Amino acid sequence: MSFSNLLLVFLVLFIPTLWAIVNIARRDFGSIKKKAIWGLFVVFVPPIGGIVYFVVYQIKKIAKKDRQP
Image 1 (cartoon, rainbow, N blue to C red):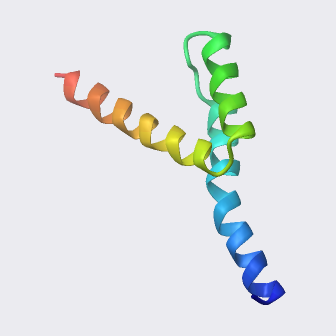
Image 2 (tube, helix red, strand yellow):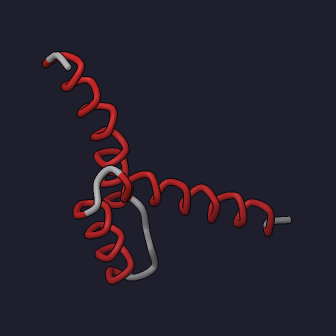
């Protein structure tokens, strides 16, 4: 595997983690404890943490939209 391919794989795997960190910093979780737990999970389990965060975030977003009249 060449360096450019390795760099591309690294960037593709790093993007969800970085995106999740930025989203966690901006979003209101209701408590600082929830925000800290998500932040630690995303930072210490990259890139799976970022992907899991966005799947859970999208599910909650869809559920919240369905509850609104």
